[in-house]
Length: 213
Image (cartoon, rainbow, N blue to C red):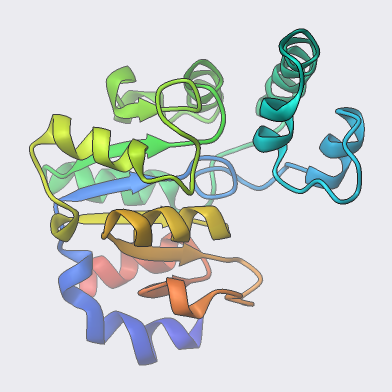
């Protein structure tokens, strides 16, 4: 358990843990991290100066973009087959279900691969397809469109919502949409403290905090 979690975040922000709407990143948050992004960039023929894969693909001529998108999807399916649920993911979703919370996923992956991944890791039953938004359903994170779409369907507002993720884009999208943000980082480096309301090392730590809040 990250000492920082309870001492400075959990007890001071129990109201965040009680919120009704929870939106999750998928890869590296609900799953174990398996994405080697530098290797993916090499496989897609990206230059070292290119960092955002989706922006790079969008910048290409349509025919070339389609070819590389197809290659990206191949890579993503292969990675989905290698991952597993993150420790505590099932416990956390069970806890939210018991509270009758609304839960969704906002991913820079496709909805189809997200559904495949959730089935692979045994978590598909927690989500409806409509509550999973990928890069074809909304502008990719950190653009807030995905959160805004989910909240419009749920009839909820950002002050009732938490965005949970392991990477910069997840925290940025939460800030852009006005939700609370929770950073999950197994390394405990917590590189973007100004963007995170809570920081935890594991989802198990988050569940324990919810139960004890």
